[in-house]
Image 1 (cartoon, rainbow, N blue to C red):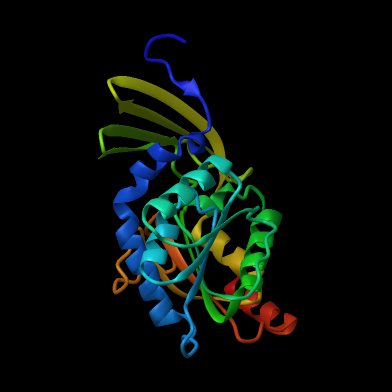
Image 2 (cartoon, rainbow, N blue to C red):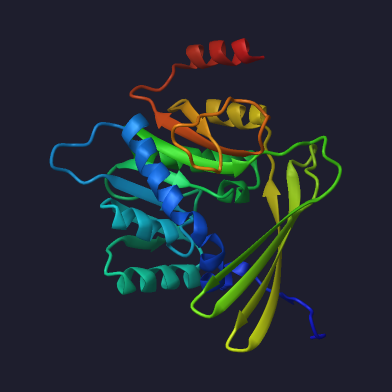
Length: 283
């Protein structure tokens, strides 16, 4: 490989570097999730422990954070390297959580949860409407009535004609990670956007460079609202952004790209007639 070139790999196979890149927001995200559960979630059962589920839990950042905050946590992922890393973090911190290998579109766990969460646009890996709806249906089945699903994603501006780029630099215990993510303009017809992430990992005097390319499914505010409306168990009760400020709500529109939706499971799903009425009112 040429000097300075990037090795084509899946960046999820670098769980330590991935964990370092996203670590900065972990405390804020954990605090926000607990507050959303307090404000919008079901009343806690007397003497019972709040239960949280994280689809695509990755390196276990939030699994550990919510376990540290006293919740009973279950996480799952398809990447075994991530799961092994998350288990090692739990052991090192003397925390307990259940981690499983499972798919976002087809999962079922024993018991019901008060909180399900999926942040940093992971939801957009579900590349078609059927997969996204299947995921939401699985989440609805996993939640208690009144339970909440907190899902964060970047909305797409279909009028934007140029690529966007973000850069993060983070360090931990002698490892320096530089992450550069480039997102190509969203394609309205295919509902896809191309993404490229480059990692530069410096540790022990050595430098490794990796590059990962994939597609995300795209949503604007109306498209996401339409998807949620197709799953009658859910209602949207709050909207925030990636600053994770629980006392600063935002409006349901395209004014900001980064959105954190709080969806609550209804005590009783809407009837087909009521769903038709709501859909007609929005059109």
